[in-house]
Image (cartoon, rainbow, N blue to C red; front, side, top):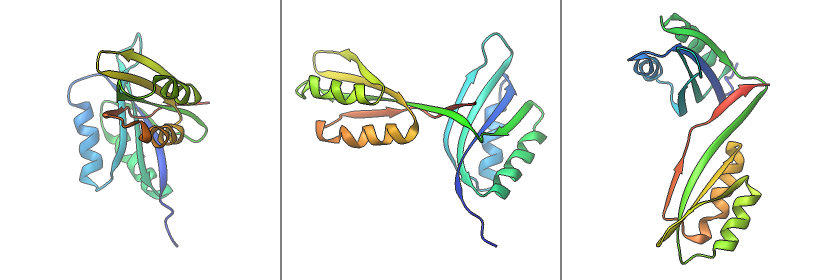
Length: 158
């Protein structure tokens, strides 16, 4: 029997307190699991935070991770997303010498826009599904981006 390694998105609801993130990342690294993306933010009007973890593994590996996460005291809920809405953001800095209208048109195609124009640079923002952010980053290569910052994924079950 072969294990099919696939990209997986796991959400973890935790008590928002010191060292929780460290304990969760220690669990992953201690077992040799890689975290591709990690996003953490407080849940509004609560004492909890949501971690969205993107990793790779078989169904069996994800089940092991989930069981281990449940054993951590500040963890309230762990679930792997089956049917989800997932988004990611990228900020890209371009030299002011590049064609602003072309960059703007590409941004618009990927749910993005120009968010800042300075003396020397143009900064764009795109927020879309991770694959579409990948495609955007490929499409803008010819405009000589100076810097790219990409957020982690955020996801919610439908």
